[in-house]
Image 1 (cartoon, helix red, strand yellow):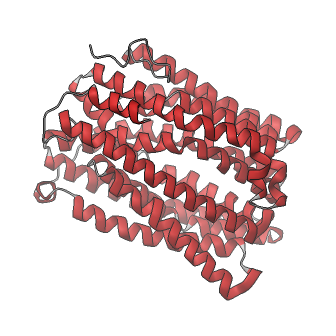
Image 2: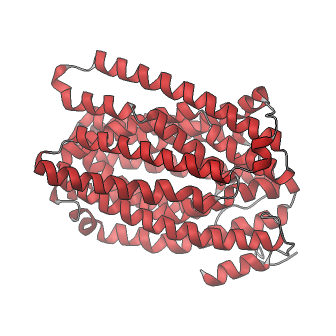
Image 3: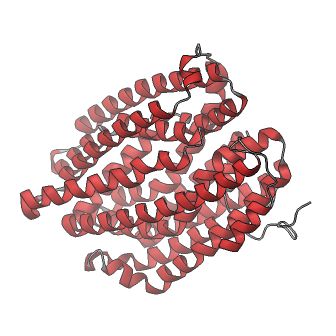
Length: 458
């Protein structure tokens, strides 16, 4: 890994001062990636501990209700944010580089107004519909869903403010509240509730505690954004290009919704078709497979504004080299994790409780799919950050339709293993489509194989 990042920085001749050029880019990429990677390790560890505690506390049925409710809330939050989180990363990076302070101020103000309105309307509508349609026999599920929908405004603004910090090249700072503060606070509240109530804590209680931690996390992020937002932008008269921003945001909304469908439709459909217990078992397997991608996610957080800036500068050569080497670094770390989960998956699931061991095959299937995902590098991110969001939307839509279709066919027959196959096939499909389109549209090789001599200076 050290050698790969040494090669990476050697590719970038430098000037100072600008965080996306020269030595500034060297420092930003290497330090940002190492810090983001360290945060991801800490966050993964905290999430792992929390998941074990929750699974043992709630058992398979309660954990299934908890996972099902929050999956719905996460799905709706995509529509509340409306693609503005991706938009703000891309445009704030460009506006910051070009010193367009009025546009920077206007974009943050307008997106905040839109997210507040949409998240509130969706939360109220979801609560009313859930309370009206669900029967008294599903009281626990109904209550958990209603409480989960209260998190929509908080979670939507967390995504928006985190993206604002990312767009201002405060990548590491923007990740700390959600990745460190929130899971620690949630775990502390769970332990406190468990101490006070004993083993009587329910899925509804767990969801309520999650909502409380989201509110606290948003408060911290709001303070950080105010401290980091450039004074020139705050003082500048806001410039609004609402029509142009909305035109770009709508495809991003579509992409995000398709991504969430691809990542959450399996849990939602397992819960709806097989019940809370299989949903809980499958969610543990799915969370385990997601450990494989934590390096990819860390790298993506750092690369997003850099990709936008390098593309705006027309520096294709540096962009190719950075993407190839980052893909290799991701695969280097992801491969042993994937192999470990495939070989020792049964022992991994035992940590959560013996009830979750039946998820072993699903874990193996999902691990193979996630490894393929890592080997393709930051392919989806590249399309979005270079203005090819329409092509990205089409690819993810094809995958989402395939995912829903396969889940509806395979879950009734194979249960959670069918859901794993459906998710894995759809994940491999959209990655393959993106790799082809990136080469055709941008002439860039995206897989970890890269191209011969990709590490050499030209």
